[in-house]
Length: 154
Image (cartoon, rainbow, N blue to C red; front, side, top):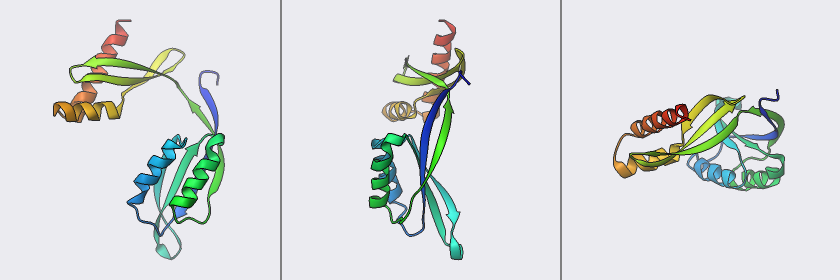
């Protein structure tokens, strides 16, 4: 297992059935600003066939109190569950590639120095696609082509 990063994390989750769904974007943003590593919603059915969502938040233990406070103050939930999680992750590095659409940051995931995955950062690509009025996928594909070419020449 030494080829992976091993993190001891926590998942906070709660079921919410009486909440304005427009507010999830705001809460998600606030949770990310306060240490959340990931935030997701899972659609569920509760008693009496009520539709609801499970709000889940992946965090480091030191961010638990801040995130608990946000969930309790910003949602209608009355209770939050906590689960200990062990996460295995790949080593990552970032490289910035020059493209015809400007600089795009690319994330490179490795195991034993072997590249397993490369992705162009979404926000950089989105900004470039808007600025140059080209399809988002064209910016993404260009960035991936150029970063792969650069890595092969190293």
